[in-house]
Structures are given as structure tokens and as C-alpha cells.
Image (cartoon, rainbow, N blue to C red; front, side, top):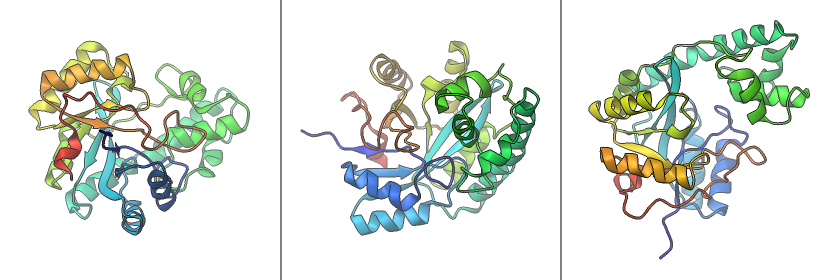
Length: 279
């Protein structure tokens, strides 16, 4: 029996994706996706366009967002699914988180100027479909264009993570705030790509436990950076904490993302998929 093709984490030009929402939906439909969530960073502005195109194509669509959270001096990401996109508290919280992004991007540009890479913030603006949400991905794309690094991943590794010259400390939402906004809007909370989180093992276990205590429901078991052994590791976490399991490409755009929409590995069959609560 063919597995249900759900992809519950991807990005459009409303945050750091390369495709507008409607084009993203068309690509997902062409790839055989059965259920899609658009999860832009701290932003829900692309949801109406995505939903309208999904309805035209007959693709099941669910509201999504990826919220930036501070945990033990690191950033982690929490995906919200199936919420009321008009919820005032959620919208106010996301606006609060977004408000710090532009200032952070400018500080990152200033930091890189100190090592001789000038005009970074201005260059990144050219890649931002949403000028109010300039991210590290936009900065990375600019640095690739001017020949500083060969690809976006290399920019992150050498310039934009902790200990590198373009890294800037920033305080995001708390875990309690993020889950409060998602649950208050009637949604489901998911820990996004835990394998990418730069938190040590003890910190991760503390995150899982606190997330569970706060009513967090799910974890991404499979994503673009979690396949094979990594997916099996987080399948064990899902079983231990009785989390629902999510599947995601974390697609940002063709030529940049390692996994296309709907092309992530399938979930282990014994796990309960998060979409059982969404469809």
C-alpha cells in the first residue's frame, strides 16, 4: 500500500523560501503531495495564497508556521499546524518575534563588515520577498553570489553560526510562549528538525521533557536532514515520549534544498502520524 504523502514543513518567499506560495503549491501537487503545510518563519502572510491555489488543485492544505524559540542559549524551531490563522494572540506573538529579525540582520551585516565583507544587509534585501523578514538564508544567498562561499550551507558553517564572525546573539520567543500561541489558536505543536539543533544531549532531553510537560504533541521524525539512522533515532524519541510523528522536506527552493516537496523518507509504520489529527 502506498504511503500517504504528507509534507508538513516548507517555506515560501514570505520568509526565506525561493518560490511564491502558489508556485510552491503547484510544485507540491506535481510531486504527488497529498497534504501540505506551509510553515514560513514567524509569518502567516503566505497562507491565504497557498490555500487558494490548493483549493483550485484539490490538494489538502493545513495552516502552518515555524516559530523561532530560544532554548539554553541556542535557537530551536517549533512548527505549529492546523491553527486558526486569524487568532489575535498568535498574530501578535509572531509580529513580536519578527520585529527582532531585521535588527538582527543589520547587526550581522555590521559584524561581517568588520572582517571586510561590506554591504551584506543591503545585498540580502535583494533576496527577501518580505523585506520585513531578512534572514540568515538571505544573507547566505548574497554571500554565495559575491563569491564568498560555494553554497548556502558553507556560508552557515563558516560565517553565521555561533563562534563565527557573522553570528549575532538574539533572544527569540520562549518555549512557553510559542506553545501558548499555537495551542491558544487551536493548533498542534511540533519540534522541528531536532537533528539540526545545536543543543547537547542533556539539553535536548530537557527540551523534549519540557515540551511534553507544556502539552507539545509531535516531533519531526523525518526531514531533509533526518534520514536513515537519524530518523530512527528520533523515531525512538517519539516512542519514548509518546509523540505524534511528523514528516517534512523543509523545502526552501529548487537547487538549494536537498529534499524536494513530498520526497522525504516515509515514517516508520508503528508511529502515529501527526496528520491523523489534521485530516
